Length: 353
Image (cartoon, rainbow, N blue to C red; front, side, top):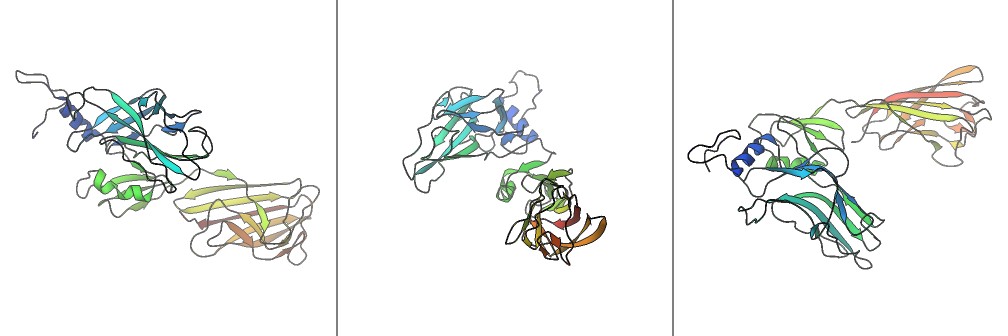
């Protein structure tokens, strides 16, 4: 096309702004084709043989150089192989599975062999097999989700279904672009145009961190923090009888700074006393420890006496372990856990991400 007009150019004696020029303007606005994140799942199952597409904003591209269609739905719609209101086949036979792909695209009458200008939502159903393969969706369609359906399914929402939200996520240029996997991040080089040397900011969803890149091949982390989050640690031993706080309590809190986890655990023995189990005591952590073994500190107050407790975060495991073996209700050297005793453990470790 060469030169193309702006959205707001008035019609002159020759022509007005063409639809493709409007789409080219939208292509300057959005990072890539995909779903505009609005929270929640784009596709869910139903009690029948349909899928439900939740309200979503979509950015699609029919062919290279055609600009972006910006479209969507503002209310839930059920879809099948024939489109909105359609259904998909029932579950495959015994021992077989299939992959259904839910998609959407915008048509434009008179272009790309389209005869209408309506949003089209549909499902492409794969061939049942012991090792199913995802089917090919129509050219220019935006993939929303994939469902692997087994013979155990009695609907698209029952057991025997595994719906994965596989749509690419998009946004306005200059804002972070979200990715669900490192593999998806690797595709940004071919999907997102960034001028040489210009930074691209990425939100890595599973790692819960921001990253930036200048060349779309090497990514650098931006330090990020999470709010304090509560969790319930599990008190256990590696073998033998397991410990119990009786009618007491055990609580934990943690906070992440990039992949550094800061945590604290508080355990109070019940008024009836504790069952201490046998073997080294362990308390579960929010995630798996990376790197080297880390020493953490604890404090035990029991029977009117306080005592420091040595513990360690074990690499490759998701727990801290007492450095002194507990026997019964004692913590080394016959130090007994009396009723209402309080143990606190605090520390930090690098977590596998």
